[in-house]
Image: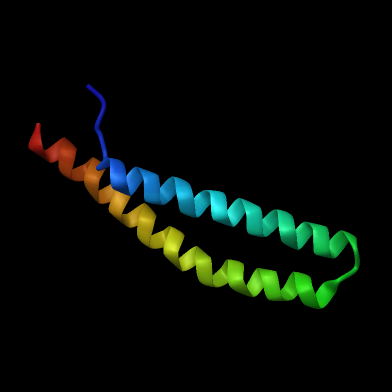
Length: 71
C-alpha cells in the first residue's frame, strides 16, 4: 500500500515547485536578453523561495514517514 501525505502538504509542495520553475524560466529569459541585473534579481528571489520549498519538502516527507509508522 502506498504511503500518503496530507493533501495540503502535497499541494504546497506542488505550488512551490511551480513557482520555482517560473522563476527559473524568467531568469533564463533575462539572461538570453542580456539583462543580467534582472536575472540576478530573479535568482536572488529564487534563492529565498528555495527555503520555502525545503520547508514544504520537510512537511511532505514527515507525512509520508508518519503514515508508514501508523501502519
